[in-house]
Length: 117
Length: 416
Picture (tube, rainbow over the protein chains, first blue to last red):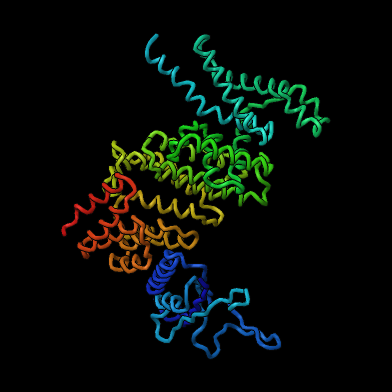
């Protein structure tokens, strides 16, 4: 069993959705995570609020946000246990973020730290 | 002599044994050191044997508890002098304090009794012995249960329990366990172990298959008493301790409604809610409030909140949505098959059976009777043949007649 991180990239929902819509997304996300946890496959996760963020560049130049030209920013992540990348992808397919056109969930295996990744 | 009075005297010693044995053991054990726990137990047992000999002849003393304490104190002092654990083992290291040993002080004041019991709780719930042993020792030393009662609660025989307790005490001795409240840095972790044992003790009472109702109820009450002792002490009065007590209050509030007179299980939706204990429900609310400070959200908080929603019998959308989210959260903190199944049931109520069936399929818990019972429930009204098939599997896997009966009832209700 390996650990995989599912990284969500999406537009800032608060700019395009009503509070009711946000509430629905929140419930869907909690149900989705609960479903992973109910299979004993949930390791951890968190949201990454967009309003408090900076990017540090070469020569220590600091700019606001990771926004710039990129429309899709990282909004959060979940770490799951899975037997294969395909199983992890199946978890990712249920992520409510994917309801937005252009949004993505990137699935990456986490190195075990034993040199055998 | 009126019969009533006679009965009362017959019950007095067992009652006092239950309430006072553990106090005497704790105080003496703290005084002698954990290594001498058997001596403490012997003196306490001996004290009750003396009472059983003398009281029928001379009458029950005016203050039976004070009498017991005095006798225990004298026996302990005699022991310290005569048997001389002092001479052989302790003396070399405590020569300076020999004054004190000349007139050994056995302090049976309420304060010292409380402190001793609390400290014993931490000594017994020590990670170096198995959780099963911790529960067994707690029942004996902290709750004053007889060996046969413990054997009955665990559905095993007296020898097994005696051996288990003996080994556990040996192990604690080898570890040179101190009878004390752990230092602040260690307290949080050790407190978790104590709470786990208390909760297990409680669950044993709620869900044990032992048919003895009286013992099961007693187990629940003892678990609550131990938890309350932690709340009474300032250093252990933590939010999660309050949450655990709240959880136990909510659960016991339904104790009388949960079982038929013959011991068979009454399903939730058929329970007579007038049998739910309103006082325990309100106590539960009180301790949950008290525990909801400082932003700590333990699994006990989540389970207590689930239990408090569960006593709302009206089937509202709000109720099930809240229960679903609490289970979602609980599973992230600590997975358990039961929580996973309950979450799926809540999902059926909040999001509909079709969605819940999809989630249930992913759980894939073969050989779990409750899993098939859940599937039977979810498919009923959607696909009654599948429902019947799953209830059938649950009946085959049932562990006792009460469970089998409950499933057969569900199966009979289906219109296939």
